[in-house]
Image (cartoon, rainbow, N blue to C red; front, side):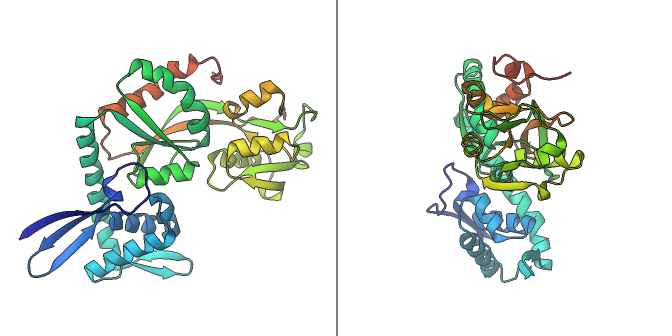
Length: 337
């Protein structure tokens, strides 16, 4: 058996190098040649897990059509159907079920190989973070991390929590930081910071609301996939308020957009105190107390359970797990006993 390796020009727009972003093709030749593209394997694995090519495209930073094309290319190479559409979702064929386990192992091995090679040549950590940790928490902590580890560079890509997990699963980053624990068995979530969400309102708003009065407010909400919004919705259900019955006047795709809308008088919103800190201090928004409603949550470090962490990535995880690194920051949210 002759084994040939060849590499073709990178097709995706993903900013960070990853083996699965390149069309790295493994060809095994006897009488017939079968080429397995790692990028196609990644698209296949995510589409199978999420039931759609759109989800695979988002995770890999390509279009839905691009993700579908990669899977169809893989099907042509193997000569079998791997996914079939049932209603609005994709389902595995028997051949697809057989390949799925191999795809997971091949991609994990490729990611480990990349991590080990990088660990031997450079000190860099790539983090996919949701809005609150990526925009408000990490910038305040990275200075201290740099003091302790001057040789390690940290790259942060900011998305919502669902998008950050997708990037981790796609092998495009070392770690994800999210506002909710990952639900997949192949991922491990570790809390590193606790916070209490703030009900933000325009200046001049009443300082206190009952639950009944809260239900009558106009709300500015985050998009689906936001862990902040999911946490608020869960807390509202716990006190008997159905989020689906509240008057949501706008859904916006980022926390700064939500805060700006609240400051402009559009409505009230649940936001992270890290995000609201400067606007509360400047008087652009005010915090409203709702007796009987306290919305606490953790921020999490998420990593692949079976993945290799470079020494640089492990140092970053250890830094975040050390509560003193957060507590020492003067703007840190107080941790309750």
